[in-house]
Amino acid sequence: MTQDQERIVSAFASLSSEQLRDLYATALRFPEGGTNADITFELCMRRWDDLSPEEFTACFELVKSNLMNMYKNSTLGWSSKKKMAEMKENGLIYILLKSKTAIEGFLSFMMTVEEGEVVVYCYELQLPESLRGRGLGKALLNIMEDIAVQAGVPKSMLTVFSSNPAQYFYRSLGYTPVEHSPQAKHLRNGIVKQPSYYILGKSLL
Image (cartoon, rainbow, N blue to C red):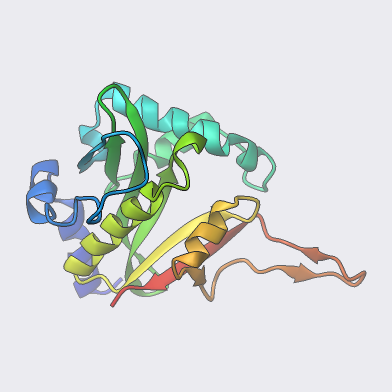
């Protein structure tokens, strides 16, 4: 990591939740015309360590509900302890999608360096099945990308299980496998073996 890259990553990681909201208030909004959801939502952005215990638990339970079986069927395996630790990594920012009564979904991300380049890395984008296909996931992803552009970060990346239909959603928004992503293997009998996951990226600038 160069000094300039370290400065960008460290500066973003050091921002308080209040500073994040002040700096990126224009990005933290739904698109004009809203979404196709029939519920009124509030968007909140804060560092992981400013989440209340109830908020963190709600986010973890959503991850567990959506991804636990995919983890179990992959080479990674599922560990609640490891996943909780991953969701508390230093520098992680959460964008919460809240109704009047509950957290309905969230996106978490951080600025980091991948393959010698500063990127915004989407750790999680989680919605219950009942709220998918209504433009909410795209809205959350766009907010993250807008924040990255405002911060001068040129690329967005994420990891998605090959068994997760969400990969086609990301690909439809311009995400493609990066050079160091695991690749499919073509076996001698003609069978194509997919990797457990893909690493996808998208240029923002």
